[in-house]
Image (cartoon, rainbow, N blue to C red; front, side, top):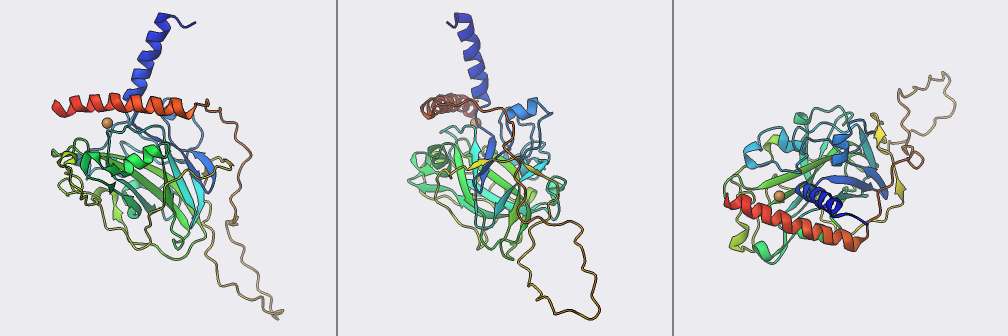
Length: 343
Ligand SMILES: [Cu+2]
């Protein structure tokens, strides 16, 4: 039987957890396979294996504010450093981003962007990344604080968000920049809260589309109507911040995709699946047989999925308990932020 003292410790821990409770993307499901992204436990245990999520020092699960929109922190969150591995997804396929939790009070849009790495995303310099949007969802219905926002839809979807990789996107390595912007305090200057998360992906198949992008440090301006935005005037309008979405961007209906298994992050600059090359018909026996050029790096069309990784199983948690916990965390966060806003 847990003693009073144990309970006190447990609730203190729960309190600490809730302070850190608005979020990281802990895992992604790409084409049905689940990969580990970046969890706080990974920060505290730096000897973790390769992940697909960029690591950050945002152990408070804090945010990036408009005064930092021109700094490197806005790109992939605070002091972000490259993920060592990547997830593999087919053009036209989907990626599901699983947050550990998200508080109801933090209403706002969800924006997803890609930037080509032109090489291995594990080594790319983040300031060189140029992002274009592939999905953006803001105010879905209603108005202002009583409206339904992308963040509400994420919570309703088990704190997860589904995106589609455009079918015609060029194959290659990309950084996926997934971001929630919270507007509960953005009626005042520098009050918006950006929560960017970066994931390395390798897109296979696809076409030749590669929209022009914008450097992470040039995505947003602090006085844009979709940044300096008062949630409490109950406006039914919301102007999406950031660069205009290119034609290949879509909005996919939210759901939780079927998971077919776990996968280890793929490490190394696995050559992007070659674009469906015009196959030269093997000419009948040339008189002078040319030495066939051996590709330096044999591109394996299907990256090997390792056997089930021996990852420590996440303790099962019943959804009702998780929802209750999320609701409690949301209430606490709301109270905390109400204090912050007053201060
Ligand atoms: Cu918050």
